[in-house]
Every structure is written in structure tokens, then in C-alpha cells.
Image (cartoon, rainbow, N blue to C red; front, side, top):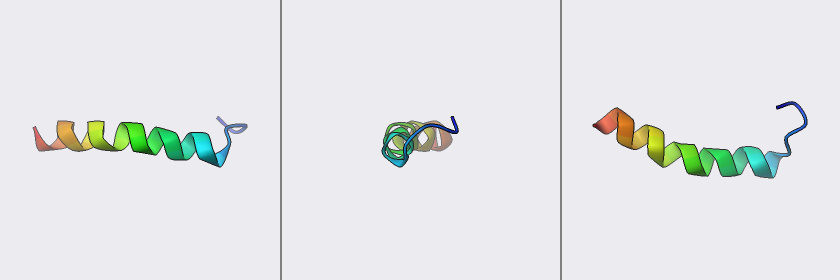
Length: 26
């Protein structure tokens, strides 16, 4: 989203980071 603040973007990275990492490892 263009209107999404940096904090929201950072939070999404925190949430999706571990999930993508686990899926990549498994």
C-alpha cells in the first residue's frame, strides 16, 4: 500500500520474515 506507514511495513517484515524463513528451510 502506498499510504502504509514505515512502521506498518516494518511490522509486516517482522511477521512475514520468520514465516518465509521457516517455509524456505522446510
